[in-house]
Amino acid sequence: MNPCFRARIGIDIGRKLRLEDAIAWAAANGVGIIDVQLDTGANIVTSFDASRAGDIRAACDRHGIRLGLHTLSAVNVAEYAPLVGEAVDAYLRAYIDAAVLLGAGWIVVHAGFHFTDDIPMRMRTGLERLQRVVAYAETKGALILLENLNKEPKDAEVHYLAHTLAEWRYYYEKIDSPAFALSFTANHAHLEPEGVEGFLAEIPLHRVQEVRLADCFRNGTEEHLAPGKGDFDFPRLFEALESRGYSGHYTNAFGSLGDMLQARELFAGMV
Image (tube, rainbow, N blue to C red; front, side, top):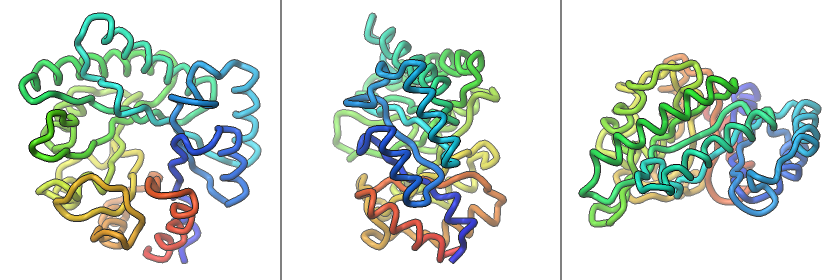
Protein backbone atom coordinates (compact mmCIF):
# COMPACT_ATOMS: atom_id res chain seq x y z
CA MET A 1 0.00 0.00 0.00
CA ASN A 2 1.39 3.37 -1.03
CA PRO A 3 -0.36 6.09 1.04
CA CYS A 4 1.39 8.93 -0.81
CA PHE A 5 0.08 7.64 -4.13
CA ARG A 6 -3.39 7.08 -2.68
CA ALA A 7 -3.48 10.74 -1.55
CA ARG A 8 -3.08 11.76 -5.20
CA ILE A 9 -6.19 9.83 -6.28
CA GLY A 10 -9.36 11.90 -6.31
CA ILE A 11 -13.02 11.12 -6.79
CA ASP A 12 -15.35 12.39 -9.51
CA ILE A 13 -18.41 13.35 -7.47
CA GLY A 14 -20.12 14.67 -10.59
CA ARG A 15 -23.76 15.35 -9.71
CA LYS A 16 -24.06 12.70 -7.00
CA LEU A 17 -24.00 15.05 -3.98
CA ARG A 18 -24.65 18.65 -3.01
CA LEU A 19 -21.23 20.28 -2.96
CA GLU A 20 -21.29 20.89 0.79
CA ASP A 21 -22.18 17.22 1.32
CA ALA A 22 -19.49 16.15 -1.13
CA ILE A 23 -16.87 17.98 0.92
CA ALA A 24 -18.14 16.39 4.14
CA TRP A 25 -18.14 12.94 2.49
CA ALA A 26 -14.60 13.42 1.19
CA ALA A 27 -13.37 14.57 4.59
CA ALA A 28 -14.99 11.60 6.34
CA ASN A 29 -13.37 9.18 3.90
CA GLY A 30 -9.90 10.69 3.71
CA VAL A 31 -10.28 11.90 0.11
CA GLY A 32 -8.32 15.07 -0.60
CA ILE A 33 -9.29 15.70 -4.24
CA ILE A 34 -12.79 15.91 -5.72
CA ASP A 35 -14.42 17.33 -8.81
CA VAL A 36 -18.05 18.22 -9.40
CA GLN A 37 -20.40 19.36 -12.13
CA LEU A 38 -22.39 22.56 -11.65
CA ASP A 39 -25.22 21.96 -14.10
CA THR A 40 -28.29 20.81 -12.18
CA GLY A 41 -29.97 20.69 -8.82
CA ALA A 42 -28.40 22.11 -5.69
CA ASN A 43 -25.06 22.65 -7.43
CA ILE A 44 -26.31 24.62 -10.42
CA VAL A 45 -23.69 27.19 -11.34
CA THR A 46 -26.01 30.14 -10.78
CA SER A 47 -26.69 29.12 -7.17
CA PHE A 48 -23.36 30.21 -5.69
CA ASP A 49 -23.18 33.62 -4.07
CA ALA A 50 -20.32 35.04 -2.01
CA SER A 51 -21.74 33.77 1.28
CA ARG A 52 -22.27 30.16 0.17
CA ALA A 53 -18.99 30.09 -1.71
CA GLY A 54 -17.14 31.43 1.32
CA ASP A 55 -18.48 28.60 3.46
CA ILE A 56 -17.42 26.07 0.83
CA ARG A 57 -13.91 27.50 0.58
CA ALA A 58 -13.61 27.46 4.35
CA ALA A 59 -14.71 23.80 4.49
CA CYS A 60 -12.19 22.82 1.80
CA ASP A 61 -9.43 24.65 3.66
CA ARG A 62 -10.42 23.11 6.97
CA HIS A 63 -10.31 19.57 5.59
CA GLY A 64 -7.43 20.06 3.14
CA ILE A 65 -9.58 19.27 0.09
CA ARG A 66 -8.69 20.35 -3.44
CA LEU A 67 -11.75 21.09 -5.56
CA GLY A 68 -12.08 20.95 -9.34
CA LEU A 69 -15.01 21.64 -11.64
CA HIS A 70 -16.06 19.59 -14.67
CA THR A 71 -18.20 21.08 -17.42
CA LEU A 72 -20.87 19.09 -19.22
CA SER A 73 -19.72 17.38 -22.41
CA ALA A 74 -23.26 17.68 -23.78
CA VAL A 75 -22.71 21.44 -24.12
CA ASN A 76 -21.25 21.82 -27.61
CA VAL A 77 -18.11 23.94 -27.37
CA ALA A 78 -17.99 23.72 -31.18
CA GLU A 79 -21.43 25.33 -31.55
CA TYR A 80 -21.59 27.99 -34.29
CA ALA A 81 -25.34 28.68 -34.44
CA PRO A 82 -26.19 32.33 -33.70
CA LEU A 83 -27.29 33.01 -30.12
CA VAL A 84 -26.64 29.40 -29.12
CA GLY A 85 -22.90 29.89 -29.54
CA GLU A 86 -23.06 33.03 -27.42
CA ALA A 87 -24.78 31.01 -24.72
CA VAL A 88 -21.93 28.49 -24.75
CA ASP A 89 -19.47 31.33 -24.19
CA ALA A 90 -21.57 32.54 -21.26
CA TYR A 91 -21.75 29.01 -19.84
CA LEU A 92 -17.98 28.59 -19.84
CA ARG A 93 -17.40 32.05 -18.38
CA ALA A 94 -19.88 31.19 -15.62
CA TYR A 95 -17.82 28.11 -14.74
CA ILE A 96 -14.70 30.26 -14.52
CA ASP A 97 -16.46 32.79 -12.31
CA ALA A 98 -17.70 29.95 -10.09
CA ALA A 99 -14.20 28.50 -9.86
CA VAL A 100 -12.92 31.84 -8.60
CA LEU A 101 -15.73 32.10 -6.05
CA LEU A 102 -15.26 28.52 -4.83
CA GLY A 103 -11.48 28.46 -4.91
CA ALA A 104 -11.52 25.58 -7.40
CA GLY A 105 -8.11 24.70 -8.77
CA TRP A 106 -9.13 23.68 -12.28
CA ILE A 107 -12.01 23.45 -14.74
CA VAL A 108 -12.20 20.52 -17.16
CA VAL A 109 -13.60 21.49 -20.56
CA HIS A 110 -14.18 19.72 -23.87
CA ALA A 111 -13.79 20.47 -27.56
CA GLY A 112 -17.42 19.81 -28.49
CA PHE A 113 -18.87 17.51 -31.11
CA HIS A 114 -19.62 17.38 -34.82
CA PHE A 115 -22.12 15.88 -37.21
CA THR A 116 -19.66 14.33 -39.70
CA ASP A 117 -20.01 16.76 -42.63
CA ASP A 118 -19.08 19.93 -40.70
CA ILE A 119 -15.85 18.93 -38.98
CA PRO A 120 -13.59 21.79 -40.18
CA MET A 121 -16.09 24.49 -39.19
CA ARG A 122 -16.78 22.86 -35.84
CA MET A 123 -13.08 22.55 -35.04
CA ARG A 124 -12.33 26.16 -35.98
CA THR A 125 -15.28 27.37 -33.94
CA GLY A 126 -14.28 25.28 -30.95
CA LEU A 127 -10.68 26.44 -31.10
CA GLU A 128 -11.68 30.08 -31.27
CA ARG A 129 -14.07 29.61 -28.34
CA LEU A 130 -11.43 27.84 -26.25
CA GLN A 131 -8.96 30.63 -27.02
CA ARG A 132 -11.49 33.19 -25.77
CA VAL A 133 -12.23 31.11 -22.69
CA VAL A 134 -8.56 30.71 -21.85
CA ALA A 135 -7.99 34.44 -22.29
CA TYR A 136 -10.84 35.08 -19.84
CA ALA A 137 -9.40 32.49 -17.44
CA GLU A 138 -6.08 34.35 -17.53
CA THR A 139 -7.78 37.50 -16.26
CA LYS A 140 -9.37 35.55 -13.39
CA GLY A 141 -6.41 33.40 -12.37
CA ALA A 142 -8.28 30.20 -13.31
CA LEU A 143 -6.91 27.03 -14.94
CA ILE A 144 -8.63 25.34 -17.90
CA LEU A 145 -7.95 21.64 -18.59
CA LEU A 146 -8.90 20.27 -22.01
CA GLU A 147 -9.94 16.61 -21.83
CA ASN A 148 -9.52 14.02 -24.57
CA LEU A 149 -12.98 12.61 -25.07
CA ASN A 150 -14.23 9.21 -26.17
CA LYS A 151 -14.90 7.84 -29.61
CA GLU A 152 -18.45 7.05 -30.59
CA PRO A 153 -19.53 4.08 -32.75
CA LYS A 154 -18.47 4.53 -36.36
CA ASP A 155 -22.04 4.83 -37.64
CA ALA A 156 -23.15 7.31 -34.96
CA GLU A 157 -24.43 10.64 -36.28
CA VAL A 158 -22.67 12.65 -33.59
CA HIS A 159 -18.97 12.33 -32.69
CA TYR A 160 -16.94 14.01 -29.98
CA LEU A 161 -14.01 16.12 -31.06
CA ALA A 162 -10.55 15.71 -29.53
CA HIS A 163 -10.96 11.97 -29.07
CA THR A 164 -8.09 11.19 -31.47
CA LEU A 165 -4.51 12.27 -30.95
CA ALA A 166 -4.61 14.42 -34.07
CA GLU A 167 -7.76 16.24 -33.00
CA TRP A 168 -6.59 16.80 -29.43
CA ARG A 169 -3.25 18.10 -30.74
CA TYR A 170 -5.09 20.56 -33.03
CA TYR A 171 -6.25 22.44 -29.94
CA TYR A 172 -3.41 22.14 -27.46
CA GLU A 173 -0.71 23.07 -29.96
CA LYS A 174 -2.54 26.31 -30.74
CA ILE A 175 -3.23 27.39 -27.16
CA ASP A 176 -0.16 28.47 -25.20
CA SER A 177 -1.13 29.97 -21.87
CA PRO A 178 -0.43 29.51 -18.16
CA ALA A 179 -4.22 29.23 -17.82
CA PHE A 180 -4.39 26.16 -20.08
CA ALA A 181 -3.33 22.54 -19.55
CA LEU A 182 -4.61 19.02 -20.23
CA SER A 183 -6.75 16.36 -18.57
CA PHE A 184 -5.82 12.93 -19.90
CA THR A 185 -8.60 10.36 -19.71
CA ALA A 186 -6.65 7.14 -20.00
CA ASN A 187 -9.64 4.90 -20.64
CA HIS A 188 -10.60 7.03 -23.65
CA ALA A 189 -7.11 6.46 -25.09
CA HIS A 190 -7.63 2.71 -24.54
CA LEU A 191 -10.44 2.86 -27.10
CA GLU A 192 -8.21 4.32 -29.82
CA PRO A 193 -5.88 2.38 -32.16
CA GLU A 194 -2.75 3.93 -30.59
CA GLY A 195 -3.79 2.93 -27.11
CA VAL A 196 -2.45 4.49 -23.94
CA GLU A 197 1.21 4.03 -24.86
CA GLY A 198 0.60 5.67 -28.22
CA PHE A 199 -0.92 8.69 -26.53
CA LEU A 200 1.85 8.91 -23.92
CA ALA A 201 4.48 8.77 -26.65
CA GLU A 202 3.01 11.86 -28.32
CA ILE A 203 1.31 14.13 -25.81
CA PRO A 204 3.27 16.79 -23.89
CA LEU A 205 3.11 15.12 -20.49
CA HIS A 206 4.42 18.24 -18.76
CA ARG A 207 1.13 19.91 -19.70
CA VAL A 208 -1.03 17.14 -18.18
CA GLN A 209 -2.42 18.18 -14.80
CA GLU A 210 -4.96 15.38 -14.32
CA VAL A 211 -5.29 11.72 -15.34
CA ARG A 212 -8.80 10.30 -15.26
CA LEU A 213 -9.36 6.59 -14.63
CA ALA A 214 -11.97 3.94 -15.45
CA ASP A 215 -11.94 0.43 -16.84
CA CYS A 216 -13.13 -0.48 -20.35
CA PHE A 217 -12.24 -2.84 -23.18
CA ARG A 218 -9.44 -2.32 -25.71
CA ASN A 219 -10.78 -0.80 -28.94
CA GLY A 220 -14.26 -1.14 -27.48
CA THR A 221 -17.06 1.29 -26.81
CA GLU A 222 -17.33 4.00 -24.18
CA GLU A 223 -17.83 2.49 -20.73
CA HIS A 224 -16.80 3.69 -17.29
CA LEU A 225 -16.37 0.40 -15.46
CA ALA A 226 -14.89 -0.36 -12.07
CA PRO A 227 -11.37 -1.84 -12.15
CA GLY A 228 -11.41 -5.51 -13.13
CA LYS A 229 -14.60 -5.26 -15.15
CA GLY A 230 -12.70 -4.53 -18.37
CA ASP A 231 -9.19 -5.20 -19.64
CA PHE A 232 -7.44 -1.92 -18.85
CA ASP A 233 -3.92 -2.46 -17.46
CA PHE A 234 -3.75 -0.01 -14.53
CA PRO A 235 -0.34 -1.09 -13.16
CA ARG A 236 1.19 -0.52 -16.60
CA LEU A 237 -0.42 2.91 -16.83
CA PHE A 238 0.85 3.97 -13.42
CA GLU A 239 4.36 2.70 -14.17
CA ALA A 240 4.42 4.50 -17.51
CA LEU A 241 3.26 7.79 -16.02
CA GLU A 242 5.28 7.77 -12.82
CA SER A 243 8.48 6.70 -14.60
CA ARG A 244 8.04 9.65 -16.96
CA GLY A 245 7.83 12.01 -14.01
CA TYR A 246 4.10 12.60 -13.82
CA SER A 247 3.31 14.15 -10.43
CA GLY A 248 -0.25 15.42 -10.87
CA HIS A 249 -3.44 13.93 -9.52
CA TYR A 250 -5.60 11.04 -10.71
CA THR A 251 -9.41 11.03 -10.70
CA ASN A 252 -11.56 7.93 -10.40
CA ALA A 253 -14.60 8.33 -12.66
CA PHE A 254 -16.80 5.22 -12.61
CA GLY A 255 -19.59 3.52 -10.73
CA SER A 256 -20.73 4.59 -7.29
CA LEU A 257 -18.90 6.63 -4.69
CA GLY A 258 -18.21 3.37 -2.88
CA ASP A 259 -16.74 1.80 -6.02
CA MET A 260 -14.41 4.76 -6.52
CA LEU A 261 -13.42 4.84 -2.86
CA GLN A 262 -12.60 1.13 -2.85
CA ALA A 263 -10.55 1.50 -6.03
CA ARG A 264 -8.28 4.06 -4.35
CA GLU A 265 -7.07 1.28 -2.08
CA LEU A 266 -6.64 -1.10 -5.00
CA PHE A 267 -4.67 1.44 -7.06
CA ALA A 268 -2.48 2.39 -4.10
CA GLY A 269 -1.37 -1.22 -3.95
CA MET A 270 -0.24 -1.19 -7.57
CA VAL A 271 2.53 1.38 -7.23
